[in-house]
Image 1 (tube, rainbow, N blue to C red):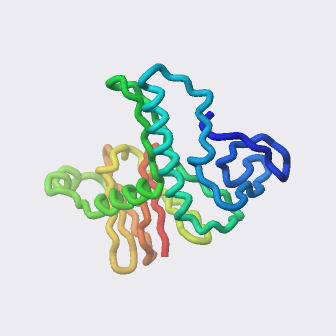
Image 2: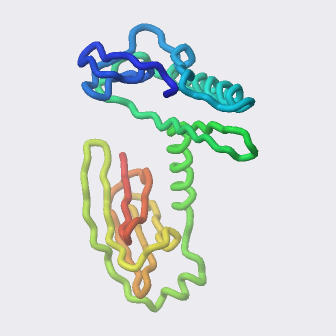
Image 3: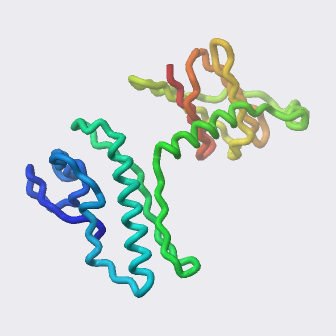
Length: 211
């Protein structure tokens, strides 16, 4: 709707002209210099005055932002299609349409920052006193090894709040403690690796480690 259509030179399928790769066959579609602004197609957008002009302006601003993102790329063809999470949101609040842009790199930076902040937490004196009489149990663990990382999955029955999970990076290992409904779970991971991030879902802790 926003960008012009074209045919893939490899498979002939109809695709958006702004795509760098054909999503049917994976062939590159970029020939020479390309800009989103030059390929905007707003012919199907009909909004009442003055929203038409406002929407046109916001859409062109979006295209400029997308051009900036593409300019940061190397321009070389890649074997893997890179997915960028550009989010477009249109709202009618206050009678003015709005477009919001989301850059996934900023999201990743924010996630890393939150992870770092959470790792600095330690159990409070009240929590230590409350759980001191609870039985301790070593968490059951599954380990998945990849070429660039190691993922630990810990079963933590009764642990549903991330604030009840405490992860400490020691000199040559990683210590995990979690407060459940009626017991304390612990795990000492004998690996000297960096903690990239973690998540708690369905009473299971996923911990991602990298060199």
